[in-house]
Each structure stands twice: as structure tokens, then as C-alpha cells.
Length: 113
Image (tube, rainbow, N blue to C red; front, side, top):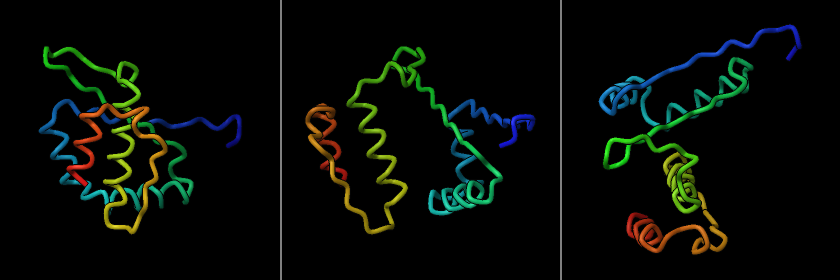
């Protein structure tokens, strides 16, 4: 990128879970979203995408990614990768999952997949 070129930024705020579901219906499945996003990156239409997710705890307070444990971050990464590649033949090798995943998260992961 040329130093004098201005970067354009687009922010998309999704205020509720209902609006997120509506957005999901418009975008389609991950099968269609990620190839479109990859094509835009390869075509130099998009340089970088950052996704920030904010969740509320049981008391309505915001929980940020910086407050998640290593195990919770690991679980989100694994589940995200499994979701994106669910129709592909993939092998995931988790090196020492017991060092990051809590036992209840390990059990839930094994039950689900």
C-alpha cells in the first residue's frame, strides 16, 4: 500500500442476537461467506478483517476476549475452525489439549464431535 493512500474502514455493529441471525440469513452459510471473503482479499478489495465479539455474562455485564481464559479462547478457535471446515476432509491435531481446555470443555467437545 502506498503511504499516501488512505485506508477506508467499514464498521458493522450488530446490536442483538436477533439482528445477528438476520445478518446470517442475508450472508448465507459459512460455506458461502468465507469463499467470498477470501476472494475479496485475493482481489485486493479487502486488506484486513477484524471481528470483535462482545458477550454478556449472566448478570448482563460485558465480557471481552481479554477476560476469557486460555481454555475458552482455545475452545472458540477449535469450534470456529471446525465450523468453517465442516464439509472438508480435515484432521485437527491438538497438542496437549488438557493444558488449555478445562475438563468440562473437553468433554463437551468430544460429545459434540
